Length: 146
Image (tube, rainbow, N blue to C red; front, side):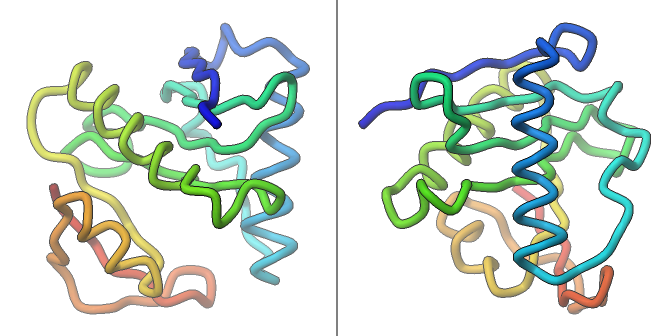
């Protein structure tokens, strides 16, 4: 199955889509990972929001963070596949789409703060680890660069 991709600036995301995105981010990063943290971090308005849709259902999402917001380089963040779409290759589709869109918009490297257990997944897309592991909100992360 192929997803329908949307890429929107924050101000252009229809409210129904933003609700689905917010709901998915809360479900994955706060509820599933049992990690209370401040998801709404003030960066969303500066980002582009890439979402993969199966009809009207959100399957996958990430935000493209421009250089100078999280890191000196452009970044991909809040990368997720909703629980109903895991194990179907949609995470790989999402990351490939995200890298292509980010590269088209921002020449140069892409830096991410990756959850350590996903290090090999990101490495398979050309990211390399450039930091020692660090704790972020109780979850081990590493910085990676592509």
